[in-house]
Amino acid sequence: MSEPIRPAVAPANRLRLQYADEAAKLGPPPIGIIDVHTHLRGESAIRIYRDVARRFGITQTWSMTPLEQIPQVRHVLADTVRFIAQPDFRSDDLLHAMGDGFLSRIEAFHDQGAQLVKFWAAPRSRELSQKAGVPDLMNLDGPQRRAQMELAVELGMGIMTHVGDPDTWFATRYSDTSLYGTKASQYEPFETALDTFDVPWIAAHFGGWPEDLAFLDELLERHRNLHLDTSATKWMVRELSRHSREDLLHFLQRWPDRILFGSDIVAQDEILETNDDATQQIFDLYASRYWALRTLFETDYDGPSPIVDPDLAMVDPLRHGADDAPTLRGHHLPTDVLRRMYHGAADRLMNRLCEL
Image 1 (tube, one colour):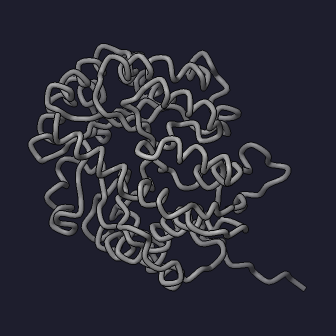
Image 2 (cartoon, rainbow, N blue to C red):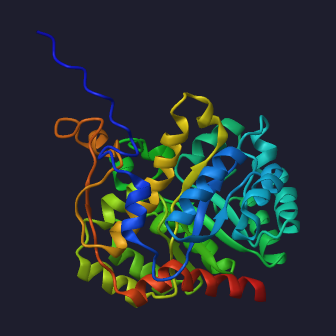
């Protein structure tokens, strides 16, 4: 007798939650949430995102939207969206797009009201730099990046960057240290840039090292212009759940105006064209990120994450399968901490940017 066919696990909803109901159970957050880290493009996907955001109490979104799609996104989200300048990653001419082309786009984004510029400096950026034929093209200490940062500062803009990547990736994908460097080495040019350009900075993804709160504590102590965001939900769930409530709370209370809420949600119409059930899948994708982050920060939930995390099997394939997920351990943070992380810190940072 053949075994019954098991339904495929939905990567964003392996627990088969009804996210609309779960949003109602969570109720409104203690203050409207500013999500400082998203990637929104495509009008149909953004309408689904808008529905999810409203259900989970997101009142403002900062987005790395392609320059050409700003009118489209603004049409749907109106004054609830702010834009972050980024290069044209889809260009066929990487050298121009990451070099002089980015200079002109920074000015164009600024004309559209953008007050932050994103510099992607993950280890994988070295692959793109080599492809473009200029090994230091995207390095934070490279001449192109320095010129772009100088322009951003001249225009009164702050800086966001992605530096580092999960420990799981350095244990596997980045084994070639001659190309990618070590995790610690990622922070040397980053700290130099922090000292050189004294404007507000946001280091995405908990500064790229949520695994090590002690390191981040020292980093924030050394650089008073630095902020961190909580984006990259799978990464945050896996690593912040491993810290004790006491340790995470102490860290957040020590830096009350320096930690900002972010999700790293990517909204794009291309996914909606894949199958007839795509609308529900996309709703679940966006909702899973907000459910997981709010559950992590607001509740005492202690159980499996609804989001598949392939890093587990990548690091330990004998112990984990492709559909496994880590434990999500809620930290039930105090209301005053939530209010600052969800809204106050971002509001304060934006006010400072408006003064530049």
